[in-house]
Image (cartoon, rainbow, N blue to C red):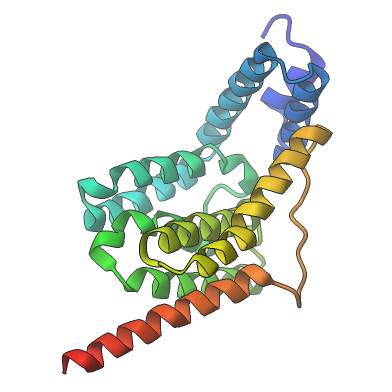
Length: 236
């Protein structure tokens, strides 16, 4: 590309996804978040995302196949969620870094992110499947040495999207809704805001022992299973 600055070259041609993202954010912050800066940010991010997807046709095909499979259950009612889920995955394939395939762990994470689209068909099976895949994807990634930034970031975002959707649709308790927002939406919003303000990616703090999101997830899942079991007993 003629006239390509070193910064844009690093963004558009660089292999390291995190470094490219940092360059994008730094450029946006340097230009003080003007409308023109946001336009350039979105344009460069889109170009890079397309190129990264083209470099990983197998991963893109796997991502698409998972969403097609879920669509077979969800039907047309789940189309908006499926489109958004597919776009989120397709535009972040660069986070696979050296991997050209999603792999089993990331495939489970992607499937979990798409589950709300089939909520009307699966009902109580959605949170149960979410709990199962959330446990399995991390175990598989660690045991097979296939941990990726795509999986690490996607895991939390998939949980945030799924459980927020679930409590808004099925949970009438205001306390549980607030707990869900505090566990997922607040951290995602805070990390995003700080990353933009600093002009570089900030990782979500993680603790092996203090994991409020995991606790909320398990408790909501237990509430669903308890309600489902009670309902079955009452119908007998």
